[in-house]
Every structure is written in structure tokens, then in C-alpha cells.
Length: 88
Image (cartoon, rainbow, N blue to C red; front, side, top):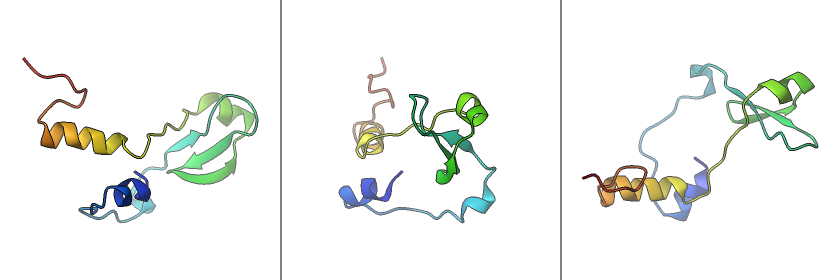
């Protein structure tokens, strides 16, 4: 989650992450819609993707600043499942 998503709602981050070195590298590309395709490793820009990387690696998805806030509000405040439907 981007830091602006947290600061926008004036909340705190609970917990700590010890850095990228503790994870298996995750490689994704920016898009498949033409133009310059960027390569990201663990969310950090690594440069331009090769043609093979652009074809084979998954595309990096993004959420808006309010997406995780809305999920937390539904699950923890309204006690609804993540998809927003009430359980019967």
C-alpha cells in the first residue's frame, strides 16, 4: 500500500517490515498496451523490460488510495465479508 493511502486517512502503520531482502524476488511488468514496458522487482522499478519479460511476466496491478481503506471499513467496522455481501 502506498504511504499516501495511510496518511490520507490519518492512521498509523501497525507492525514493521524488515526489508526486501527477506522476500523471494517478485518480478512484474507495468503493462502490455504498447510503448515502453517497465520491469519491477519487489515493487521497485528495475528498468525497461525485455521483449520476453514483457510477454511472459505478470502485469503489476494497482489499487486506488481508498481501496484498502474500504475493505478494512467493511470487514472491521461493518462486519461484512471482503466482497461487501452480507452473509445469510
